[in-house]
Length: 223
Image: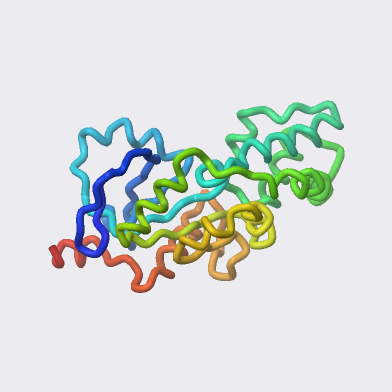
């Protein structure tokens, strides 16, 4: 990956991650900021046809990208659903990934016709998650990548749908690593009006950089 930190080109030191260029307030067709997430890998297939642009800021998703928690979610939901002779399938998991917990629980209960309410599903899975999440491991390569960006003065942040108490639980063993990020925006942040797949979380996250990323037009004028 090639980028720029405070006017300098940032050479790659190995490793890698999937990046997705986004438009809107941070750049109409230009990458003033890169959103990195577990679903962005497909965009890399056409990366060879694109001209790389300077990377000024990086926003990371958390579950399944920074932390190996998606696997733990699967274990928890599968255990609870099996109590009612239901299968928590990969198709269903793909549908709820990134959603806030109540929205996800509603879809699971409706799809599998569970004889419990979404609130009860959350309560049952929370007991399992409280046991599993403090043991969450970092995903391979992410510490090297984030340290590389920090070394080259490229500001980073985290945008996650997890509520703050759940974020704290998941990051129990990795406080030093998450201190490298300029800020973290969680799903219960009062400024985040809609959960994923709406972009609110990432937009709020981008606004909190100091200074925030400039628009594509402003970025071009500075070149």
